[in-house]
Image (tube, rainbow, N blue to C red):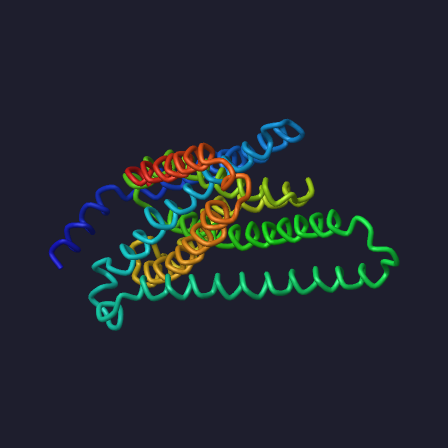
Length: 321
């Protein structure tokens, strides 16, 4: 309890609503631009490499870097923040939060939710795909060249699966982006906000690269990619604005127990979704089921190094955000 009193005294010394509002206004525009740059970069790189002999290799390496970023985001940023929010002295002194590790359980629920969505979506995609295959076979009078057609249909199925993965992944990342935006928007602590704005700018660049790498491989249309880039870029700024509105209406800041509980629970769900997507739909798919990687041991080694670099880059940012 003494530590809690000390924290309150330290926060009161840094409390300046006018300066905080000014910094948050700057952060809305800064984070929007850096988010857009981060997500657009791998998409533009993929389009630039398209048609070149190294296109498939470049796309694979971009996706491995992205997977490392997303895995580190979930394990080094989102989940520890959720545990911290629910173990804060304002929350941990209350029932039932002090009696049970809710952050871990809710993260598990997030994993199971991601599995359920992934399973249902994949089953739906495969069912629709095989229905179309059966219709094509009925219309076929002479089955010449069927092997090539089947190969094309399997490639189409893989693309559809990648689109599902990208969309579920964006949902998990948007959860996280809104949470950090609302937390920043509700804070009145200038000592916390000032370094956090710079750190979040870099955080959004790397997280955007992670999502952009997956979107680039999914083969969406230009309008869909632009929409997904915009949605990712606008969620944290909108979260900041929402946090500022919540503070002005309710008077709650980021140390309020109700705000901390909401932050911890949403962060845990987001973490579970991202852990599942990174390990199952990104890393496992490429390292165990990718024909290009499995046929080239050198490429597999490079892919692992790129995966580790992505994880390391995002992990280092935990020093500041």
